[in-house]
Image (cartoon, rainbow, N blue to C red; front, side):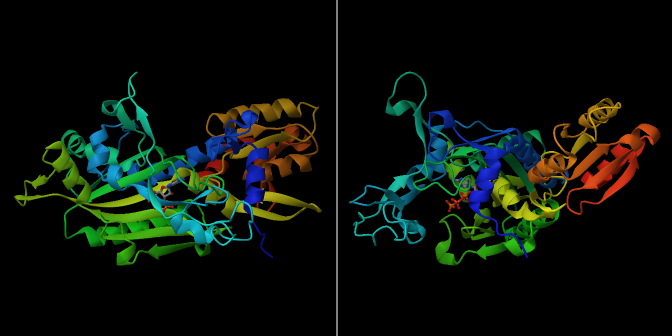
Length: 443
Ligand code: ATP
């Protein structure tokens, strides 16, 4: 029987074991903001590294950048965010709570949680548009001329650097520019833990192609992105699906869009968006900046403004689905254990080293092995409590391998290597341990 995973179990585990904490908790927390703890940042780092290798370093013609979070305010006029990056907002006249008008059907009344807003006896106001960009002021004077925005997406950083990358990197379409970084949206209804927050981290890639080739590249990236989740992160295929947008669902600049959706405990919802953004962004920035953002192909003597295919996803959402997808409960050595069945390459801790006994030179030997492995991977050393307890602690954070030093180690320089999922143990000579782990983690 498969384990039922709930958001509550994941939120509790995340806090208890140091993946995710409520932000500013000692002050009572700060609405929908979260801090990542020691294990959370390791997991995030593995997500970023896997994405970066898969999207950039393993391919030709895709390069990375890191653009500033604060950008020229004209960028957001050109991109359409100042005029149109808004959600419809409604207020309940009775309890004053605010909801996204298009989410009312899934929302709960805060006073009568079994009812949807507006069905609880409270009347909702007419919807009005609410811009999601965080506004701030640059310099000491709070006046219109000094207004700046925290970026609501990383994508515009790639568009405004299109010429720089083209010229400095001698690129030609098809080529891509990618970045990972924080984005900010003043969401009306954040929630579901780290699923929707006001500050989050995005990984986006803008792939510039010749108009006319965009449909095939759109298909290419849809397939590639789905493959990353199943083959590289080990997400179960039955928990993922595409939602292809009907023409009336598309953003005004998009020719096609497919979301990759995940089956969260609260239902199917977006994980990543893959969009054909056409030449909208480059044309708008050309218009607003006065710079020519077309590409001249020396070989074919053609000039064109590239179309853009964009896979865009949030790191935080991936971290959430990794925990949800990996969570399991089973019976180990007569007791129920919670286990995160992370693929070894994404697991925050790759191995834990234990002396069976705290005597006979075993702790010293175990520390020696721990120090050796630490040079390559994130590993832990644990000598506290029974060996069963120590295994359980590692299972719960998803450590795939346990290495135990026992009396036989002292005689023949072998250790036991325990597999988290099968709980099988085999003896491995210490001088083969690094190769063996490398094969299992990276292989
Ligand atoms: P939604 O319709 O759910 O508000 P969106 O379609 O506006 O999302 P995009 O602009 O396509 O989202 O952003 C790309 C990705 O960035 C999303 O698929 C998601 O993974 C992530 N993301 C967007 N907004 C948030 C948020 N508020 N919190 C966490 N991650 C987010």
